[in-house]
Image (cartoon, rainbow, N blue to C red; front, side):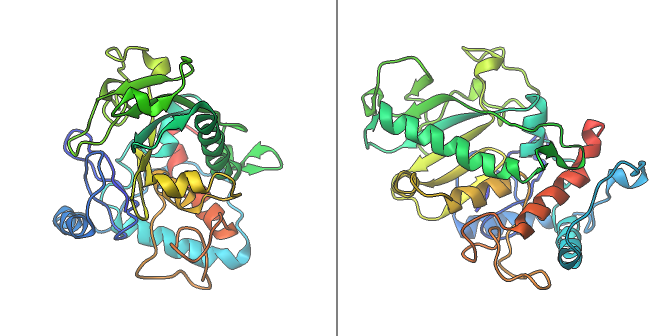
Length: 312
C-alpha cells in the first residue's frame, strides 16, 4: 500500500502497493478496504488519459534505447500509468522532484515506532543499509558512470537528519549526529519528526519554522513499526516492520524497502495485470527480490516523461 500527500486541493499521486491505483492521503498507512474506497471516490470524474506536457516539446536530446524485448511491455506500462493516474503530471512530490529540489541529495527521518532499544551501532547499521539500498535505485539511472537521458547526478547522497521516538530512552546514544524528536505523534499515535521540517508538509520549500532550517529538513521517512506486515510507500517515504528491516540489514537486497521506494518515484503495482513477456520483477510484489532490468527501464521511463519539468 502506498500513501501519497495532498497538495492544496488534494492532488493525487500514483503508486499504491494495495491496490494498484492512486489516492489522496496523509502520512499514515490505511487499511486495504479504506484505500479501495478512497480510490473509487477519487477516480470519479477524472480524465481517463493523462496528457504528456512534453509531447509538444523538442525531443531531439531524448535518449531512449531499451532492449528490444522490453519495448512493448514498457509501452503497455506507460499507457496504463497514463490512463489510471489521476494527476500524473500535476503531482509535484515524486522522489524525482525531491532530489531535484535538493540539487542532488535526499534527506531522511527515521520513525522508530517501537520500544525496542536502539544502540549507536544499530543506528549506524540502519543508516548504512538505508544509503546502500536507496543507492540501488539511483544506480539504475547510470550508464557507464554517467547519467542516463540527461539525469544530472552520478551520485545522490542520502542524509539521515533525524530520528523520531516516543521515549528518548529508547535511543541509547548521547552524540548529536542526528536530530532527535520525542513525543511528536501523528494522528494515529506514531512518532514522527517535526512536521515543520518535513517536505511532505511544506512542499513550497519553506522550512522557516524548522529548528535546524532547510539543511535539517527531511524529504522522506523510513517508518519502522513493531509488528507491521508488508509495506507501504509514497512521496512521504516507506513503511515496513521494524523486525523485518533490522533482520534484513545484512542482506544484499532489502526487497520490501526497494519495492516501496519504487512507489516513491511513481512506479505502480501489478496485482491485476502483467506486461507482455514479463513474469518476475520487483514492482510485481512477491515475484522478485531485487531490481530487475525491467524495473530499471520502468524507472527510466518515468524519468523520461518527467524530465521536461526541470528543463532537461
